[in-house]
Image (cartoon, rainbow, N blue to C red; front, side):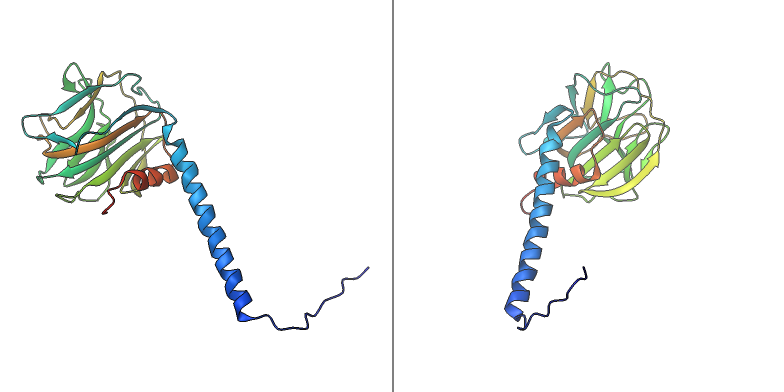
Length: 219
């Protein structure tokens, strides 16, 4: 049996074409929305710590915020640190978030967190990752550091800003410190809010969904 072509005897109206185009666009938008909802719903998986401060935890030259975190990922385990930061001073070197033990910033000397040295860095002591992105002053920035067991990635405001292969190996720590200082880092001055720690590596889509979920309405 052959295929018999059918010639539609009437012209297709521009209204029909417009309706078809709108329907295609609607389906595309709906698909993106449903995908985003799926990513947002997964943001509770592997969440070992979450805290939102009232208008942000204010950190100054003299004050830092230390938080005990149970089940903090260690060794080479995958992990994700997510914070919102607003800097009030543009120092050359400072720490925004890090693991700590016995009251010091990761006294073992093996770090994981965010530091600032002219640009935002993923801080791991020996395999630091530079984002080549400066932190704007007086403006909230969403910062996410992701380690999947092999690779380290930095995301700023939902966008990937750097990645490299890292052999991370951190010793057990008591919790995290927001702000703080070391012999090479001055204290961070500003505010930190919406802290999240995961015992897994968030995907790029989940990082973007988290940014959209938490970003200020005016931004």
